Amino acid sequence: MSAKIRLYVEHPLGAGQSLPLDRDQAHYLFGVMRLSAASQVLLFNGTDGEWLADVTEAKKRAGVLTCVEQTKPLQMPPDLWLLFAPIKKARTDFIVEKAAEMGAAKILPVQTEFTNSERIRQDRLQSHAVEAAEQCGGTYVPEVGDLQKLGRLLDHWPEDRQLMFCDEAEVGNALELAAGAHGNAPWAILIGPEGGFSEVERKRLHSLPYSHVVSLGPRILRADTAAVAAMTLWQQALGDW
Ligand code: SAH
Image 1 (cartoon, rainbow, N blue to C red):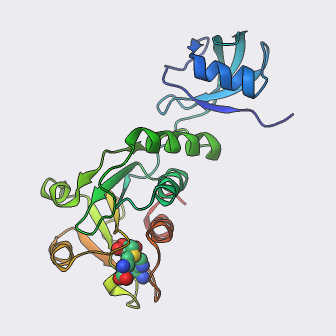
Image 2 (tube, helix red, strand yellow; image 1 turned 60 degrees about the horizontal axis):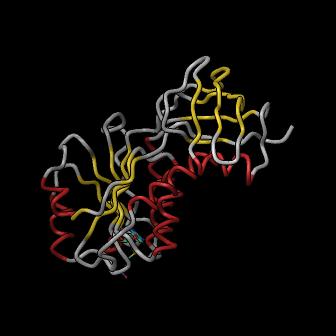
């Protein structure tokens, strides 16, 4: 049997629960993927786990799915936010996709002093996170925030949330991620833009009581590489891997 299609839906899921498909979903399942009545798909909505569902009605522009049984419980990622300064479109897409695969709870684009891009398409980035969750077997979709100023985010920072500050100026210094002390705390990772952090930002970030300054090795990584490397380190030390 070929692998079942996994689909994210915004609808409650439960035994016997029917849900209508919108035009795009019907087109994808019946037009593109050639499913028909009696086919089965896997559904998740970010809160009710994963459900096996029958196609009970298949029309060109509409259709109905009916849940049969739960195939996976909801599995929440660790309480980890990824803060990153948006870069070029394709690389920003990559960061969001990888963050969703690697187990971020929230993805927050931040504007720093040297951030190249002033604007993001939040809806597009959110749909990349959905696609990544569909593909990787996740039952949770991280929320992608709107672009916000890093300074303002830090002004309202929840003080119990630890911050893994990836500072390119620490290049070559040993990795210092205090696993023991903050193992159960909520965390965030911060990755800067192509231009790196300004001295003012660096000074502030170093002085925050919840900040943990981290080096990602002896070479300067591109921001997209840095995001993946940092999430790997964090997951290995403190996460659910
Ligand atoms: N233009 C900057 C590099 C920015 S790299 C310079 O030449 O110094 C983009 C981001 O990736 C950085 O802001 C940092 O958050 C992260 N990063 C890249 N390499 C890193 C390293 N070796 N250690 C820590 N952070 C790194």
